Amino acid sequence: MTGRGFPIPGSGIADKAKIRFSLIREECDERRGPPGPRIPPARFATEMRRLREAAQLSQTAVASRLGCTQTQVSRLEGGSRTPSKSDAERLDLLFGSNGSTYFTDLRQHVVARPGGPIWFMSWTEEVEPFALVMRSWDPLLIPGLLQTESYARQVLSQEPRMTSQQVDERVQARALRRKILDKDDPPLFLALIDMGVLRRPVGDAEIMREQLDHLLETAQRPNISIQLVDQRCLMGLLGAFMIAELPNGQPDTIHADSPAEGQVSADPRLVTSIWNRYEAIRRWAYPDHMSLKMIEEVKEEWT
Image 1 (spheres, rainbow, N blue to C red):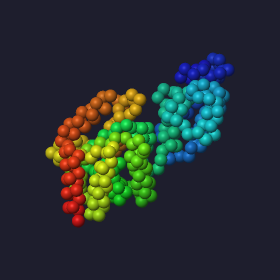
Image 2 (cartoon, rainbow, N blue to C red):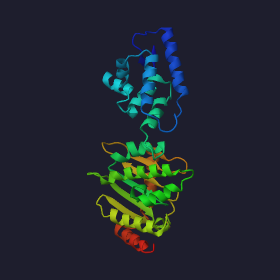
Image 3 (cartoon, rainbow, N blue to C red):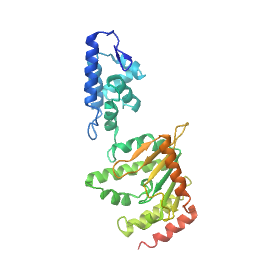
Image 4 (cartoon, rainbow, N blue to C red):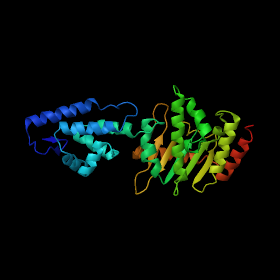
């Protein structure tokens, strides 16, 4: 018999084998929704081993379907190897029916770092660390990668139903993200910021002065450009976004904010739309040297 085109060794086309594998698929589909917040890595290993044994597949047989070695499968089932996105997707093909994302969802919760929503993980783990160039637009706040800890804490503490522990975790996660700008070969980061952001009070005057000082200091790095955008620019009011240029001919990827759940996509239609909006906003931007002078002037207003 076959499961999404994968023959089960030794089973031939026996009806019992067909029924057994069909039941496994149904169980996988019933569990296809996200399994809750962060879960221990052993859960992925246990589920993989359980379904493999129920399908009467050897580790070698599963390895051939995953395109890896039997040793790697053994490590996955033992919990000593972190499942890759490809591992999870192929396990969904092997054990699930059309559209099953059970193992993909499970992996997201296994590898998710505390301090950030799960939907954002694909950006922070699979896009941002590898970007050659990142372009951002922020109409309401200082970009996350340029926020000080105090500024970030003030912003995150006002999120609805956010506990103090969750705020701490989010602040730490944001600090970890900022490390990509400190790498030996950091990405080029081009930030467009609405001028009104400089005067939007986030915390007290001391926090704002510290934040604007940080912008001025950070802008001295050769890989970082900060440009203020005239407040008469209206086409950026729909929300913040980022564009990442990736290496090795990979398509540009965008992240667009929303009040409920942001979107990460490499869909050419969406990427082109965001690129067009970015260029339209950039035409309202002041040059770097003028922008830094304006930041310096506004900093003196925070007394």
